[in-house]
Amino acid sequence: MRFLLSLFAIFLTGIAIAQSPVLDAKSAILIDAKTGVVLWQKDAHAIRYPASTTKILTAMLLLDHTEPDDIITAPLDTERVEGASLHLKPGETVTASDLLKSMLLRSANDACHALAVHVSGSDLEFGKLMTKKAKELGCLRSHFMAPHGLHNDKHYTTAYDLALIAREAMNYPEIREIVGIRKATISRSINTQDILLISKNKWLEHDPSANGIKTGYTKVARATFVGSATRNGMQLITVLLKTEEWEDDQKALINFGFADYIRTVAYAKGAEIGQIPILNGERKSVSAVIDGDILYSHERSKLPVLQIEMRPSSDLNAPIERGTEVGTAVFSDGKGWSTTLKVYAGKSVKIAPSSMALRYLFGIGALALGGASIAMRRKSRKWATSFAGKS
Image (cartoon, rainbow, N blue to C red; front, side):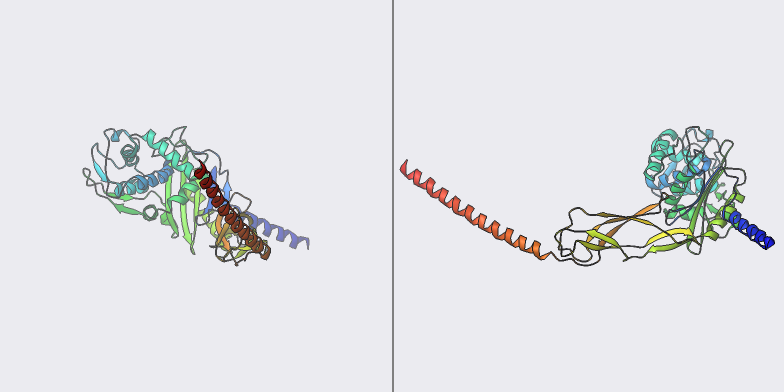
């Protein structure tokens, strides 16, 4: 019996180890791209250097501030940029579309510099634009100094912030398409023989479900990686910072995610989730229904338990027709994730008879007061006329 218990303990220990990936990365995170739910993390809010994963944010700003056919001219100092792997010549021109491919596939620092000068006049000013964009996405511990990610003590982020950036970036069709391919060709005005771009993301070769996103490396940052993969309709995003074994880390983290987590509909569109108080109704509240599905990602073995905070619209008065917007509902898991949906009246609510009577009486009273007021004004005019005649 003791032997069997020992075997059972070993079995359980094996399961626990399998459920918690052991990574070399100093910081890491795994999120569901659809819901934004954090599935697993390791020191995800620690300040780290992103290296060339910076270019994910740079790519978004390129799309925000240029059109595909815009002509970008390489500045005079382009050849002095460290890691100028596109080998741009001063004055050489490339379209914004091809520049996007160059920075995401070949990780060309000179392409990033050319964009920064084109959009903001300098790398430093472009860095300010990057920091502003990041804060708009909810990145509270990030600061960017340049578009390429070359080391700078003041150029930093976190695994969590990078996950937010990557999630938003994958909503851009142009970025999503480029980071999922292994090669592309471009057109250019001077160095016309150097047009083939090969992705530096070797993980695309190892995982058929992989569809992005970006590698990075500097001596200080060490290897960095932001990955994406989709299996059975579920897309997961990984971030690995400061690692010597990014491919092993990626394999362990992404396989763990798909093995242990699923996405389910916690509440379906049209579900009644509570009551909203109303005034002057035949009932004191009206049922609230949501206008869309609430998706949540969770461990396969655990059903989601979400908290719901109802936020009624101000001064809701009967009568209320079914389908009327009556407020919002905030769904949260108590771990930092939340989402908000509008809620609508699930049923019609008539005005209370007592309120109807009061309204009727107020209406009669208003008419009476109005009649008296008219009569008084007429008398006033008569008095005025009478005095006028005697003057």
